[in-house]
Length: 75
Image (cartoon, rainbow, N blue to C red; front, side):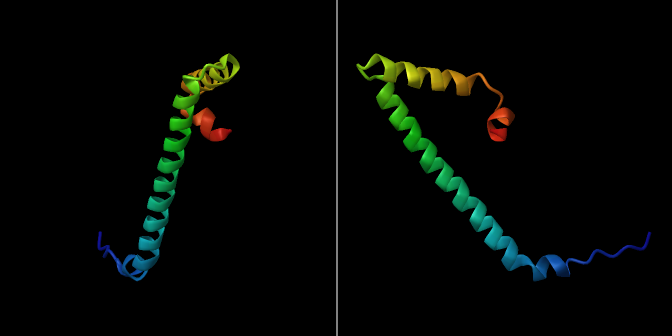
């Protein structure tokens, strides 16, 4: 086999790859912030003295915990 690897397309597309990496990291950071806020609000509401609010938060947590992650992604 006389195959020669050609990395020129990768090298030429490197700026686009870096932009994609930055976009992925930005989305991950935004998701981390949003999930932290939702989690903090959920914790605060779970300790609420209003029973229906507490029940809704507990039901939501149990629903999320008991469904497969791929099902959650689908919805």
